[in-house]
Length: 223
Image 1: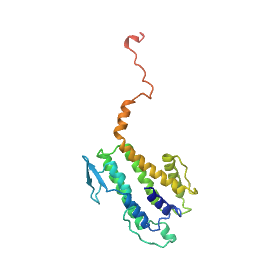
Image 2: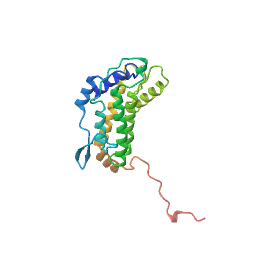
Image 3: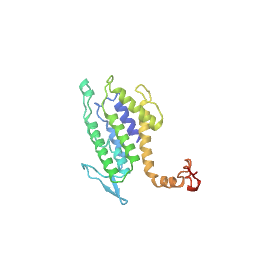
Image 4: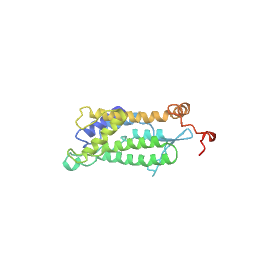
């Protein structure tokens, strides 16, 4: 996964998120190698999700696996870099944008169906928005650049406690590491669901001060 992210971020951050360059073949190949089938689980049985559904009800694992499919089999169209094309997405990134939108719809349907909880839902949507910002063209000097910088800094700080700015020499690595860490944390969140519930019951209220004792009726002073 890290190699896929690094190739993507090098591509997009190279000239200030100029997304007019074609997605390289290496990116698709790497994604294909690590991606797993896009499936949802029902009663312990993996069921393939038909493409093009208005909303596919998936469990958390299937939603995460879909992120690994974002850059698989993208169209590669070479476009000469010009001021006009610099502010446009490439054909491949337009497809990625469409897939991100679909995953937003799918995750909402999964939440409503009870296959994921609110914690996973909102952290997953934050990851989708993070990818959305990555593929959105931002031309150097554009007013929105500061908003993008703040969003990337907030994401990396919230996940890996690293500060991020456009001028960072290791900025690409920081964003890639934060994205990878958040993906892994969401996977661990799913894997440890039962264990976490057991621990909550075991340590319930032991870290909190006891509630104030209620006074007995006979302890009350007569008026």
